[in-house]
Image 1 (spheres, one colour):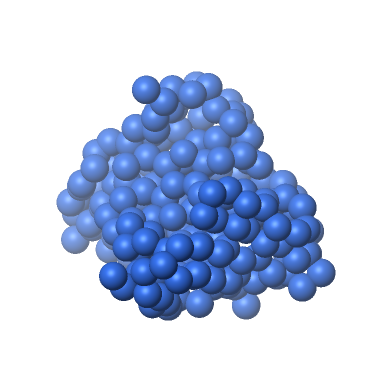
Image 2 (image 1 turned 45 degrees about the vertical axis):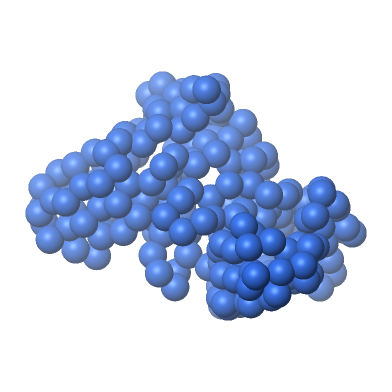
Length: 112
Length: 111
C-alpha cells in the first residue's frame, strides 16, 4: 500500500530534550516536506527536500533540522524543543513539487 | 499579508446546495493550485489541482482559476453531510519549490 508513515503519532517531551520524528514513504517520491499545523495559522512549511541531499528552509524553520540521506526517509529533528513547538506535525511527499502531496498520519507533539 | 488567504468560516450550506469556497493568492508567479480536504483529526487529502485559467470539473467538484484576479475557487455541487470538513487552498510558489497553504475554510453541510 502506498503510504507516508510518521512516528511517533503522539509525543510528550520536556523542554530541551532532543527528539526526532521519523517520516518514510514507499512511493519513490522525490519531493518531501514537513509542515506544522496550528489553530488559526493553518499548515506552515518547515523544511522541504527536492531530492536526496537537497534540503531547504520553508517558512518556519527556526528550531528544526532535517536530513535526506535516502530517498524514502526525511526525519525532522528538534535539537532543543521549546513549548512554542507544541503543534501537530505532518510529513508529506509527492513525485514532484507540482503534483499531489500525500500526507502522513500526523504527529501531535507537546513540549512541557 | 498572507500569501494564500481563505475565509476561515464556518460556511454552512443545506444538503443538496452548492458550496462555494474561495481563495486569493499574492504571488503573481504562482502557476499551480491545489484544493485539499481535511476531516477533523485526519490528514489532508487532495481533491483537485488546477494549472490553467478557467474551470476544471471532477464529479461534484469544480475548481476555477483566474490568474489575472489571483483568485481560485472550489464549487461543490449537491453538497452532502460527508462533505463537512476543512478545505485547504494551496499554491505553488513562483520559484517552483514551495507550496503555501491557506488557513482553510470550514464547511458545514446541514442535513
